[in-house]
Image (cartoon, rainbow, N blue to C red):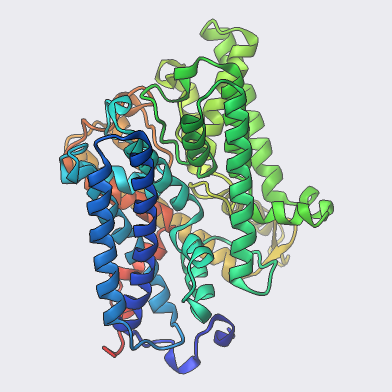
Amino acid sequence: MNLKQYGVSPNMEKEVSYRFIAHLTGLLLAFESMLLLACCCVSMIYGERDLMSFVISFAVCLSVSAILLIYGRRKKCAMSRNEGYIVVALSWVFFSVFGMVPYLWGGFIPNITDAFFETMSGFTTTGATILDNIESMPHGILFWRSLTQWIGGLGIVCFTIVLLPGFGASSQMLYLSEATGVTHNKLCPKTRVMARYIFMVYILLTAVESALLMAGGMGLFDAVCHSMTTTATGGFSTKQASIAYWHSPYIEYVVSLFMLLSAINFSLYIVACKSKWKQLRKNTELKWFACSVGLLTLVISVVLFLNNGYGVEEAFRKSLFQVATCHTSCGFATDDYNLWPPFTWMLLIFAMLSGGCTGSTSGGVKNLRLIIIANCIRNQFRQILHPRAVLPVRAGFPFDNKLVTTVLVFFAAYLSVAFIGWTLLMAFGVDFTEAMSTVISAMGNVGPGLGSFGPAFSWAALPDAAKWILSSLMLIGRLEIFGFLLIFYRSTWKGSWS
């Protein structure tokens, strides 16, 4: 591995500089203070009671940022892999800690556990909420909820690299540490340029959806907030009834379309802009994702038409929306699928586990990993029949054995963490089915679960201990397990105190 291309010198690979970590974390918190300042502007426009909450939050966040920047002023120029993972993991935790201050200071969510849960659910784009009175919240708070998801969808570090200078050669290491996927499509030689291209696609999707929602009768504020949370595949809404509040088939179709568009690898949009259509047609993951969404929608549509008395168009629309919201880990709702036949629940659970495509804002295991696992299973049958055959794992192109091993280990770790979380939730009094669904939902960054924590209910009734566990699972799922668990590995922190 050529460490120099990542701004890492070979002799510094195992060194950890806490001043350097403090400097980068300070830059990231400076970015969060800018976000809080933007919410101050929204509060001023509407003249509501949440203005002081954001002013205090801005001051606190900026002060801590300044302290970290001063402490880390004697920083080095190169970054080790250890530092990259530490900075990324800490940034998500710190963003959630300071992001909950507006809720606490204004008394909008007076409980620390609930405030942290809501903020972590926002930044990780999970969309699970403990609020039962969303419409009573001031516009600034509602905008902050949507903004946390919009920032978290693309990635805190990715946003900061695009908008703030000061990362230098560390940009690529930070970017790779946060965007932990199966592959990294490097279409541009510089990470900052690549991040800008993706950022432009992100803004374009958000802007186009906002315009279409406004054309369907949604107000400017609601349209912008819902577009941000759709593009981020987050699911926070400005209404307690979510998208169902508008009773509009047009809005449901628009949101369904953009949920699916946001679950596609963003680099494919850049490829499309370069008129490389052949690459799009050959993309195995995109085909798998489209077929999965289409098949699940078709099956559930037929079930709803035959068993639940839905009309043909309504059955298709409700099925498409809920399959899209589960498959893309978005979490919006237009219908209570707890009232659907139990057979459909398992299909939706599969969609939650699958998630979207790599390189998108969606959660879950990701479809490319499922393709690799399916190929491994098929090759095992062939190997039994033809012991001497050399059978590469392919998904449009062959994968090396190291990557295949990484995917299999990831999937095993994913299931292991889910099982541990499931067991812990049951130990704290959560029912079997609800514990299972909330754990899968939290790790997949989906939002709604089954039973009492389905799309028609909030997660407020969960015990506090369960909320902390699920908050951790949200972050584990967002950073794809190892990106977060590495900070608990002792060797990650070995190094100098320079």
